[in-house]
Length: 258
Image 1 (cartoon, helix red, strand yellow):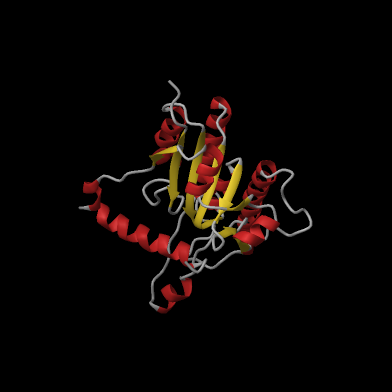
Image 2: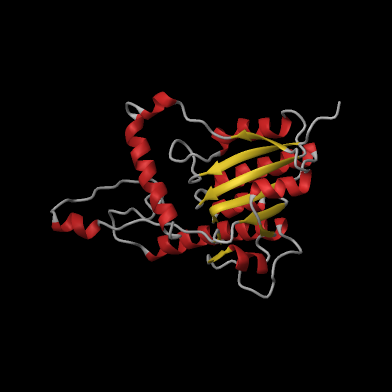
């Protein structure tokens, strides 16, 4: 008997970070993504993306897993952007074969950032002496409690530039033939969906339910997958991590006015 077409929907929401500091990382999502591609016979996999970005490594690991399974199973992948797909969030969107967004979605931020602070003058005023001992001249690079060294800044900028190059290569490969090559796309700027479509960063304006019905028929079904956090993880020592993570996530979204 012929069954109704099913689309597996993977929810990708939050900051991308390794360990326990973010909801989105390859360890947490690995089994979820694998199940979405292998359970039943989905006609497509849809990605619901709402992420301001985060770790470039975790973004790459998640995106690579999606691409590997899509090619192995020969299943098309369609991304739907909600509030934002910026930086690492756009890296995930670019792993899809097609990208759609709401007219007010924020898209882009193809760049790399490293933020820190300097508190050495505060320590001096408070009469605190900083003592650091290392083996290896670069081991204490950019110590926030020591004066900034020009050679450390140059070394960090070199690392950021290399990561930026990896990001650009990923976007150019995944969006080959679609990008507006006359525009500056890789400055870290963000755009709303209509302009992002003109630049070739997304394929169009659209929402998940009507677009899936339009493509696969009115009887299309969805099967949802996402990371579920255990209820008890909210208590005990985990509460402090959750609070800090919530502040970091709020700050990440705030830079895009969200």
